[in-house]
Amino acid sequence: MPELPEVESVRLGLERTVRGATVARVDVRRASVARRSPSPFAFANAVTGARIDAAVRRGKFLWLLLDDGSLALSAHLGMSGQFRVHTDPPEPHPHCRARFTLSTADGPLTLDFLDQRTFGYLHAEPLVGTADGLAGGLGSPALVLPESVAHIGRDALDPALRRAAVMKQWRRGTRGIKQLLLDQTLVSGIGNIYADEALWRARVNPVTPASGLSGRAAGLLLDATQAVMGEALAAGGTSFDALYVNVNGESGYFDRSLNAYGRGGEPCLRCGRPLSRAMIGGRSTHWCPRCQRGPR
DNA sequence: AGTAGCACCTGATTGC
DNA sequence: TGCAATCAGGTGCTAC
Image (cartoon, rainbow, N blue to C red):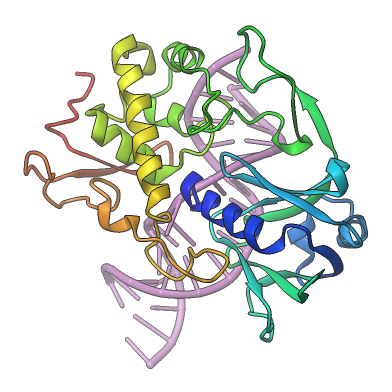
């Protein structure tokens, strides 16, 4: 779930609460959470004793910079990951996959990584210099990213996102535009909810072959994507239930603003026609058959 | 090289 | 009531 606005809410929370703290102890409660590391012990050893300098994000990929950037503690929330911070730690929740005990100037702090569906992970890895996630262009500065994030494109709200390059990539593909929106190597951070919302807003049918999109339409779609995500971010993200919360366990309320996602059969808020719903590329997709006319 | 399909999981809900 | 099928906000590997 968590898409860019939700992950950004988590990043802000971590930045506020754990920046400057030192990792005193790591308890991996489910070995598979560290499956990208050689072993859970290797993961725990690598981060124990490290100081947290910053919380950084690209798209849905999140990492804590440790010890002046010598190491990244990467995290992906998958479908159901959460970070929760406690000053007075409860018994670990059944979905708690790892517990970090941090020491801070104000005393100990507990950071739990919860993940019901276990698609999320934690990883300790080096940072590598990369070219921009998007090819070409002049003067794109080398970026330092965790190894596992090196192939991910700039995120949709990154001011340095090269719009022209993204639109060109979109229009080159043979897949439907929805699948391209979800391709994290081109623009990152767009997930199934915001893809549907952006397409509805831009009045683009999800199965439109991307090659058939005019340059103007592609630009408007990118505008719509950024607008939707920006609004969701301002609202603290989208959540339908207790599965998606910030580090304090609070939910965002952008779900009140959804126009397409989850509204199959309900009237389009622009034209009143019932919205369609179907599986596209394995993901449930919602659109207005009148406002978002198909390619033919 | 680009793309479709599936695998990875748990839990809530729906339908028989 | 019980049990199976279906669905959920994501990514990455494999086989075409």
